[in-house]
Length: 385
Image (cartoon, rainbow, N blue to C red; front, side, top):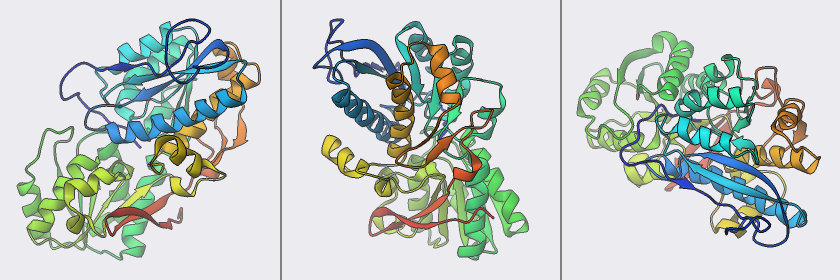
């Protein structure tokens, strides 16, 4: 998912260090007991700001992986450094450099969004620091020649067509209106949907994302006049919720379909439960609540809530890095080689990577979710063709 070409709404990105240095001094929870070998991994994503909900989901997954690893390896614990980007490409380079300058960081889970990935990834590539995104889905991220880039979810070339297939074959909508927020993620996803639907798309419009727009009356009027059966929105939950609320208030009953950027309870809060009901959300991820093993129970025990979107894929990305350390990886160069050749089962999927860092296409799954009774629940897996 995700993938946000954003500008921070205000303030300076906060650097949150969720780490311990039991052997090196300092405080924190992740290595508070036992010995620390000094090795670290980092999470890079929004922990504050308008997109924080998704970043927190991922960071919590990474926290669980680190906690479990440290319990099993008490004689050589790993520290977690959480870097709060606020989802902003403007903040990404300085945070990337901060991670690079800490030579004990052997790998990064993230960046979480595509926009910040575009800003940070060239620096990671130059420094030889492995980064595994659990959610940034813009296809072009894998086309830049960044040897350190890896992705544990399918990109928008899988999610976009699947959303179009769902609209065409499940909703059977022959009149569709497509809207995007002009972000790298939202516009790219909308373009892929339009390719599948072709002439069924009878209208399009663009809004401003990043919290810059709250009144969508002009777009609502266009949708209402188009008399459509379905609406696709490429963007994030904050705008999607307001848009759905205003569409419903205007009497538009067409089903809204959104990408994984909408997959958060905050969408329902913004739209209101009645207006949000029936909204369809796609994601190149299986339901986190159906992850393998004891992941769901362990996550709830640690955080007090069920795992959210990308909690499981972030957990798996962290586990890949931690398994490298367990196998004796002590340098960034060795970690890059380890991840490049990785082949293993996680709680969300089986992972092996193509030459450009993409998840093996055979392992990619796209699901549709639906808002039902005020919750986002799994609907069905969408066929790839």
